[in-house]
Image (cartoon, rainbow, N blue to C red; front, side, top):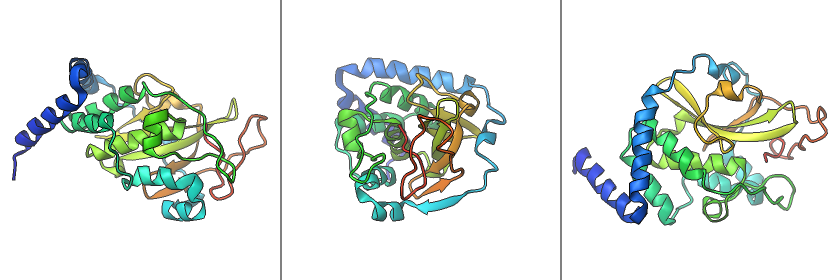
Length: 247
């Protein structure tokens, strides 16, 4: 069996071959990520936004896919790894992440997806948000939950355990709008990968949001049912999840 050092050399060669002339720029990003990660202060107490909330309802994603495949099927396949990705940029990203320490991968993923356009969802046939496939996102961009799903899948493909990651669906009570991001907990430190921010964030920095649900590749855990009458711009609950559409 090849040694870990040999596997890393092989991954490095594949990465440079796929990324082509842009590899010096990406190599600089790697150095920044590796040097920056250990200096980030621990965010003690930030998890209080999520922890301690009794689930209102837990829905297996397989059930959601059966109930409304047009809306949820593609996104669920992207999350659980059953969608196979041939995009060269994606493979180069995963090869790069594979040679980095786990903590440094978060910054690389956040910067990689910052170059993709935000595009509001087109409603599915039954109304509400539609979760796009990863291939669609890589070609056209997407909205908040599609950014979060792509980041989840990239980190999962690089070896970050799914148990360390959750997609958070939340509401801003001041504006009545909804948002989604990826949170990752490594070595007791929870960080946020949010498409509205350039770098990583802590939960404390997103404290104005009120969590509605947590999502991973197996299940959707509803932790609060938002009051959709509090604000004129609030979304409408979906028929199968009880959740508002996430922009």
